Amino acid sequence: MKKIMITAGLFLLGLTAFCQQEENGSIYIKHPYIDVVNNIVKGYTTGDYTAFKSPFSDTASFWQSGMEKFAPIDNLIQMWTNDQNYLTDISMKPVGYPDFLHYKKADAQIVQSWWNWSAKVKKTGEVITVPMVLFDEFNADGKIVRQYVYGDFSKAQAAEM
Image (tube, rainbow, N blue to C red):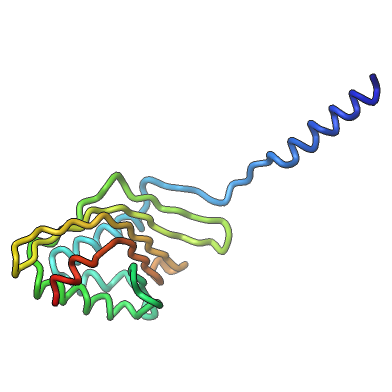
């Protein structure tokens, strides 16, 4: 009986050791960095690229689905400015709500936001809608250092040609 109790005790001890939970940070539904991202989106949809660029660090970079590597933020502004040449009625409607993620490891600070991007093609009148997600990574000074854009923008890119 003693062996059974010791075996059961060791089994339970081993089980609890493998079932430990550890937090890796916090998620916030309200945070000033969420407002920053919302203002960036507003700057893009209204064509106010000065307001759009101000929250980014001087060395900020971005990546969008289909790109091979990160590019300077000025390239993103150039791309988005070019959108106005072949698209109208550009809008980004939030899907759900954005989250501010603060990870313990490396003190990472990221705003994750989900959107439905839409625009009308000037040539054809077709309305394109793209579900997308943005990840904006902030540094300790509160500036965005990296932006990740995930979505299938192939129809919008084809409209440019």
